[in-house]
Length: 522
Image (cartoon, rainbow, N blue to C red):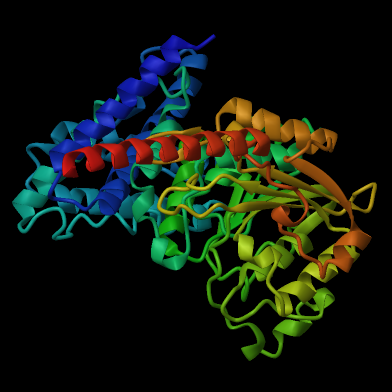
């Protein structure tokens, strides 16, 4: 049964976001608009989160009329050290979202006010455990950008509209709303502008349905995991999907990720906070995963989910030290310089625990091309790391029609077979206006095949590693799962009879025409 209250709240939230978009349309580019809205939402969220935390403590102590937002700054300063230790940050009452918004329309220096507030929030975490989680969080929120307006007055006008638009969003009480409102708004905004998200770099936002499939593939049979990791985490949606699938308390040691792009790195950290993940529960690094891997002292990870950039260039063999890297050395060869896909795969494998799984979105070409990629497939197959290869329907991802594959890696297989699933047929997706989507029934159908290892004609097959070796380590699904012939079956005898009948009719018509012509001429 559909929870209508949740649906109503979600629809209302989405309408509010569209209303802000309409207010700023033509002034701020979509992708930049997303950064401004998310930054403002984040500011509101941490303001309300801090207020709620302080107020709850005072009310529990019997001070029922207490309101942190109404405190004098000098009095609130006394609580700074303790709050930074507990929450990771501190905001003066005068700099809380609600108070800045209340004065925004009359603040001729609103841009400077906000710039100062954001700087103070980031600085409040310095020297604490949360310093790295807050550093540079507002870098993409440029209050002096010409994108907001050509003059200070015009920019401030837009900033007022942003504050009011986000302030009027009915997100409910921080501790009591029916939907994960802040997180839902984040995901909606990402979906709205996903087509603009780094397509030139081979990066594509992972839709929620594919994210859920990856997480369920990696956690089948588990009710909890130690920690989840994504080596190319972008906005963090894959990491957080694990929380939705398993539950917050089922991920014991937190969320880990690495992202090279500073903008998406900031978005990922904001996303963690907006989904109420505490600063001590996530560790996101901003570095090149392939050349400067972080979290090596945190691995192994029980769940790895990733949608790494497709076939991007990397230094590869031009750096002679990489062949000795613990991640790549076992395969004896590096991924091609023009196609780094398998470098990410080997990185994931290296960080994977002995009882975990990695579910990775892959470009189909890596499963059948020769050269170095074939040698890496040989290493993966000969060492029995490949559990399943799944081909998905085309047009599932925003901004590309590519029909991607999912590679599932495991270090605890109980047999020497690889499962191949063709989930590209119409029974595994629903056509929508802009993109195909995986409904819950489609995800469930794929999971049933994966979990049971059932063989189903035209859909799934289990192949011995030896046979795969004989086929030059080809891992493309189409090499092992036959396509159903959907062409119309024609009865040749019936067809011949129809042809004879047609020829006879033609002969008759010709005779009649000849007779008519002879009569006319005669």
